[in-house]
Every structure is written in structure tokens, then in C-alpha cells.
Image (cartoon, rainbow, N blue to C red; front, side, top):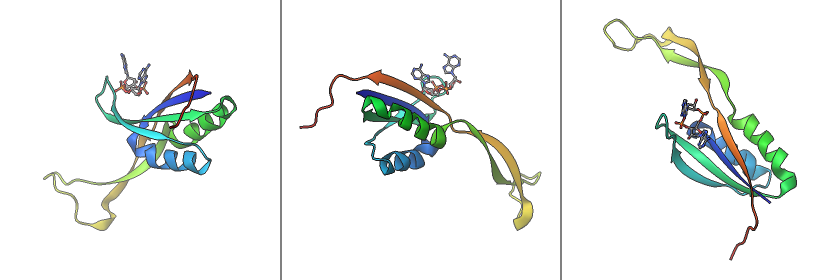
Length: 112
Ligand code: 2BA
């Protein structure tokens, strides 16, 4: 058996947990904080059989890995106010996601 610890961006947690649950995996979510940047992140605990490891890693890759995305942001006037015209949103490419995964060998999974 394995215990997977996956540290991911909290923005990715909903889709990741949903995908894991849909595929039959049990997940415990912990609210955690990165020791370096002090950003809030999410750590998932996932207890699985050995032969399920690749499937879980694949789901984590699909849902939470580093990627680029386009966000639309309002342009600000020199005064600092947001432009009132609706068509002022400009596309900006931003980096998001990222997942650090620890796969631990586990002796027992007991439920009482
Ligand atoms: P990542 O390496 O992608 O790590 C993202 C978060 O995953 C980390 O947040 C931490 O919560 C967890 N994590 C990663 N590797 C770990 C490990 N070996 N053991 C335990 N937890 C681990 P932060 O600690 O806030 O780090 C955010 C980012 O800052 C890291 O992104 C890395 O790019 C950089 N970083 C972290 N520690 C560093 C260090 N000692 N020196 C230089 N850069 C560091």
C-alpha cells in the first residue's frame, strides 16, 4: 500500500479532489502553508493500493501541474481607477498550478 502526499495550489484542489473521487479514490485535504513563500496551499492525503499509484499520479498531473493560462484583467487609468468601459479587459498570460508529490510505502490502512 502507498500513502500519497500531494502539495498543490489551493486553486486546483476542487477539480483535483473531484477527479480523484470520481475515480474511486479517498482523499483527505489539509490546509497547509509553504515554508518558503508562506503562501497557502493544499496537501492531499491519498491512501491507495500499490497498483493504483500511476493512475493517481496521472490524475494529479492532469489537474494540478504547472501550466500557462490567459487571464483577463481590467486596465487601470493613470489615476489608479479601473477603466469604466467594458472592453478594457486585456489578456495576460500567467503561470499557475504546480504539484509536489511524495509517494510513501505504507504498512497498514485500518478503519475502526
Ligand atoms: P515548489 O518546489 O513547487 O514547492 C511548492 C510547495 O510544495 C512548497 O512551498 C512546499 O509547501 C511544498 N514542498 C516542495 N518541496 C518540498 C519538500 N521537499 N518537502 C516539503 N515540502 C515541499 P514553499 O516552501 O513556499 O516553496 C515555494 C517555491 O519556492 C518552491 O516551489 C520553490 O520554487 C521555491 N523554494 C522553496 N524552498 C526553497 C529553498 N530552500 N531555496 C530556494 N527555493 C526554494
